[in-house]
Length: 180
Image (spheres, one colour):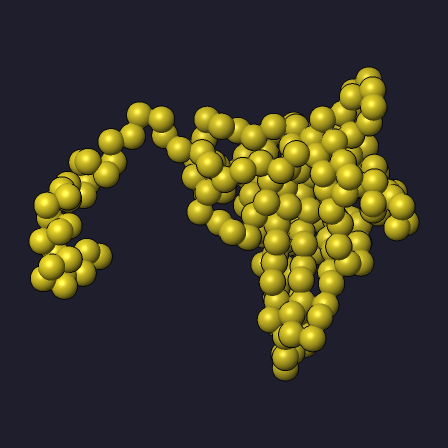
């Protein structure tokens, strides 16, 4: 069976329509909070897969879900950010005197991450993005959150760019010199 992006979207959408379905999704690794919307048309910005919104006294939480049947890479991250720009523009124009902070989270879901591109470094640097990979097997679908722990393995960066020795640090500390 060829698992399609639409299948992934259908599973998340259908499960999220009931409390029991949301509980099952959560048990399988993906929590959905707030009101969920599907296939929102954003004009020239494109069409986003899923969006959830929840509101409290001081914040509006907007989760943009970008789903891929295969690889999650820089283009997927940029696509989700484009959708966030559209939503921010819409809110700013429609509700100019909004008294709540808007907090975005971009949730990227795919089969695997492109570990051989600059995506991993962008992901490490952004708190607004969360990445999950999914597995689809005989017992159903599962979501696994990807940690932000990617780095170059042969890295002498601190020794070459900032050659600060222990003695240098002690000297600066004693003289009350700021390191950076």
